[in-house]
Image (tube, rainbow, N blue to C red; front, top):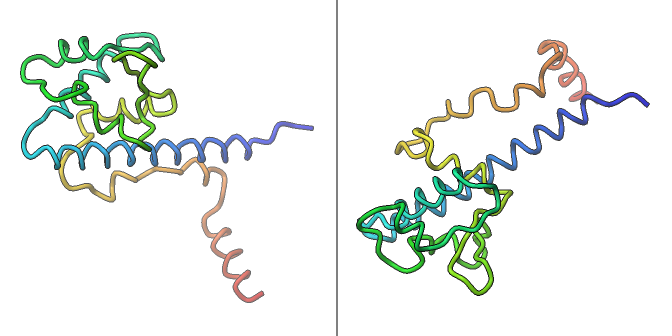
Length: 157
């Protein structure tokens, strides 16, 4: 049986949607944690340092709290190098190595976390235009008018 391209397209669409959901989850956690810090930026500095160190190393390598604090520089106070929101029950973004103070980004969240340090990760108000082009590969090879006509015919039974 010939390989089905539509299966690949559907899988790509599903994976893209999962990444978008993970990015939203990560941004929501960071936004709320930042709000709760009342002006301190421990979480942002610790998270940024953690992500940068993770990008420099092999995927899945644990990074010590001490290294995160050193990389973040002065002013990184608080417990767990500012990673406390990621270590909360149910966040499931970061995992702690058993019996140590070392952490790593869960593989499935690595790309979502990397998005945090991109220049456009947090720019205040969000624009609907950020979604422009998402899922466009699904419509490749489909005639728009033909699709609309077929849908309209289906409304009449």
